[in-house]
Length: 344
Ligand code: TXA
Ligand code: MG
Image (cartoon, rainbow, N blue to C red; front, side):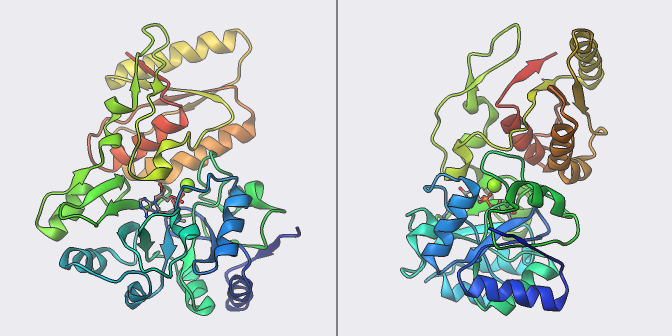
């Protein structure tokens, strides 16, 4: 398939919108990461998203809307908490899991009776949804398992030849995917951490929220090897189906070094020297201390750049943050490393 490379001019967005209306696939820039969009109400088009990504079909897709009032097309019931979160955080990097209406296709929701919805904070995305005149289902626009794309060139490298068009906009401002919150019970539950934190949500709702069990780092791996620090995912079944697959993986082998910052730096230098002496190409990801927003912005792009440079091994310094933005970045970092952790 020939993929059209489009810009974000009005004319190009209008062309992309007609592709969506015809049941085609268009990659689009959002403020978090690039998405791979299709008409959320067209089962065949949504099935094509799974094919293009090579994505397991039980992994449901986020539906993107351009006006809060479009919630009414997707869900039969809104709670005061849902309305409060919409008013506080939309458009923005917060996805709400709500009861779905019967006519939202099973293909879109992976057969669940809920649907995940968000309003992205990117003009190109909002214009595209408005012109297509339908909610747009869009997972991240990467080949399944690869790091999420935060730049048009990353989308082109994964999706050229597989989809109808790519809307090439600016680099994504946030750099990690939206926070996903399950709003189907009284206690909102964070299924995927993001730059909107539990603290932000609690401040908006005036009540406690909780994290899904699977996000507690310790429940995700066991039997750490004392020499390499390597651990294994232990088959835990998380609520957000996407969280159970190996994710965000660079081509290189990757290890996360965790511990007190000076020791982490030393250990990275030591391992780098050691590996380079035996002819391996080593890449390092070490963010400034507590620069979590920047880490979120740069993390996936760094992984892709290091892969493009052809490094064999990536050594990444863990961020120490138990529930803020650093925690959200760590969620991605540990997954990309396949929970390969060395403690110092
Ligand atoms: O920032 C984002 O959210 C980006 C941009 C494109 O909007 N999208 C994104 O989509 O990250 P994706 O498909 O890569 O991740 C969606 C996550 C997955 O972990 C999926 O399992 C979860 O949301 N999810 C989707 N629908 C769900 C539902 N009904 N219940 C629970 N989890 C759901
Ligand atoms: Mg994804």
